[in-house]
Image 1 (spheres, rainbow, N blue to C red):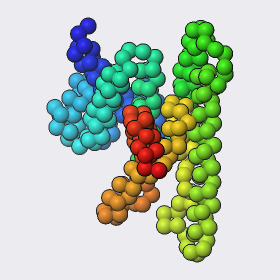
Image 2 (image 1 turned 90 degrees about the horizontal axis):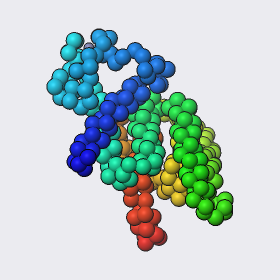
Image 3 (image 1 turned 135 degrees about the horizontal axis):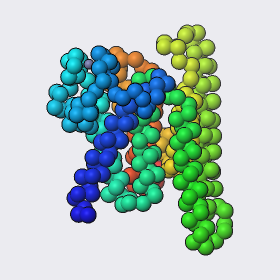
Image 4 (image 1 turned 60 degrees about the horizontal axis):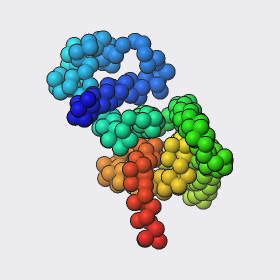
Length: 280
Ligand SMILES: [Zn+2]
């Protein structure tokens, strides 16, 4: 198949998956099945016809409005579809057709879903990270079998499954430790100032953030855990400035920034590590 044709197909497939991710983002936190019922307009509950449900295009054709009731459709739907399609295209160019492509497509889709759910709810269903950890381990078990079949030395610190487990525990432990210290610090601070926290927050990091870093460990490795952890605040800082200017809530969802930092580490990890090595 000509390369341009396969890229177009990958892009279309990505936009369809993005459409499915929208359903996940919308329904998982509410415990609604992601298979049934078919998509409907949240405003008038009218079933959306297949030709009004084409990723990206339908939004443009309908000019962002429901055909039945004219209610505005959130720009987030085509945005998620477009971002997913671009990610499919970029990862396909990066890996070609192989197991790693599927592994990291899953990881990036996971990042999109938890980021948007966190933006809406400031929390994510705990099982999402456990599912991601299970999927990650599946790919590492597969890689371990391939490794052993190739007759590589049976040194267990080179075994993919061992490395994955080590990175998983490191991701969880490292982040949990920071959460503990952060919580202690916040509580001492609030006690000393004798005041209640403004929006009731007494936690530095949520447990969702801790689980999330376990997923980062499995998919990106130990080094990435440390860098993602310290890189994310820089992304969050940008938002905080905006929030301060527009007086929005200062309770910021943190998973989008951990996700952005993960994406940065995936694509530019070596450069980032080298750059920091030069600075310090
Ligand atoms: Zn409607």
